[in-house]
Length: 423
Image 1 (spheres, rainbow, N blue to C red):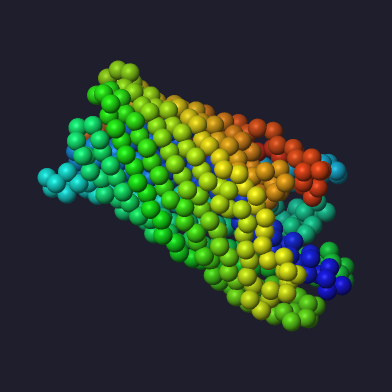
Image 2 (image 1 turned 60 degrees about the vertical axis):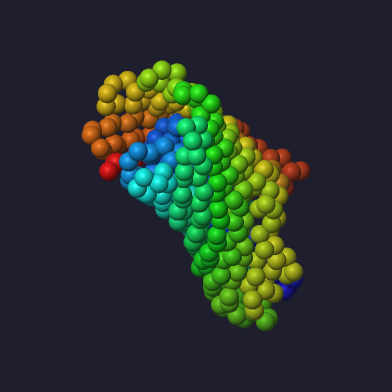
């Protein structure tokens, strides 16, 4: 009995961990959508021609081209709906997450006549959450996975310095100070193990810090062309906090209702490249490429301190994620003195293989199609951007994923609004 309890308890804890990383609106791991409406309107293609303060997030070398200081503040609203249809039973479960606001702010300032430009980004590059309706909690296809609330939140404070070395080359360098929270709440299904027992509640509340860095270079081979290279380093967040499960202390010997909790999550190295050209005085086009080292997130280790017995020796969760690429093209057309129209396309790979996908961590390769509009009046600019995603079909077979064979139908929408000004 104790061996089975421990095995089932481990399965629930595994679902706790993976579900917190579950709402993958951009379908490239748990990276959040673009941070400004301008980039959303171009499907995230902003490495080459983003020149205001938000260049700190896309290509800090471009900060060096600024002639004035600038401020950028924006909200990205992300919405995800996914439907899982079990391959064996045909049962369906739907998660229709509410629109989630993701705030990001940027500031840049020139250092006198030195040619050095300071840029600061305070952003939410990774995170979001996952939630199914409570009606699904007791569905057999979700045993033992009755998650109803999970959240991974991350803030990146990223100061940068940029310098134009000559008329053709600019460089930028920055550091990232990371703070992240990891929170879960779900039913712990003791009734699925011992039918006469009431369900308990499992909770994790943890946070952690990390440091990272970034460098970038922009080269102007001609007056109308740009080539950009960017690198943003990997970082590992060590989460520490509390783990609590109600109702299990009398059942599993040597355990307590509450214990310490710790785990580590590795976020990827990201290498980017872009080429852009000004086709005319009013039309610009750029192509972007990114490589993300998601294979660094191979496993997630769990430490429950004096409750480690619940894991039955299985103290790590396999992810087996793959490295991914993102390819895209975007452009803008200034069709009047005050108005700019934007459009873009991007293809984003999913790092999650069939053998580790689950209804609580749905993902698939996707095609993003975007439009945007910007209005400028004097020193003030307001931008709007919208992205609709077309996800590839995902249907792992029983051999690939016996627990979660079936079909995964995913829809997502992104809406961004940004205000910026120069001073």
